[in-house]
Image (cartoon, rainbow, N blue to C red; front, side):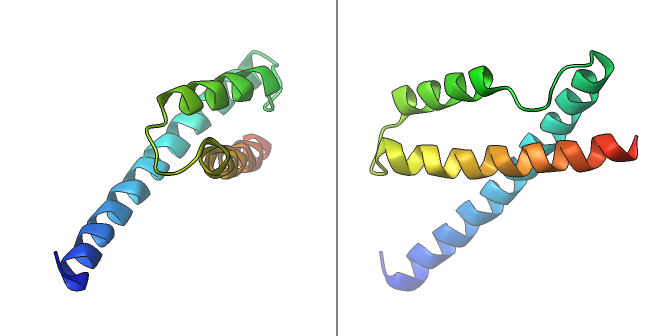
Length: 90
């Protein structure tokens, strides 16, 4: 493959990641709504640890586990922020 072909594939993957990130965020909002109804905190460190443990086990590379955890930390942090913002508006 040449550079342009690889970049086209990267662009396609970026679009798919964007779709997945937004789908994940929508589900996090649903969970946030349920947590509010159940009077549960938004931050659940046990759940986050389970997520990180699971993704490290599933990680085929080439990204190492530390890199994958950092990426997921960011995604989860943004979802948590979105949950907080939305829960204040309800």
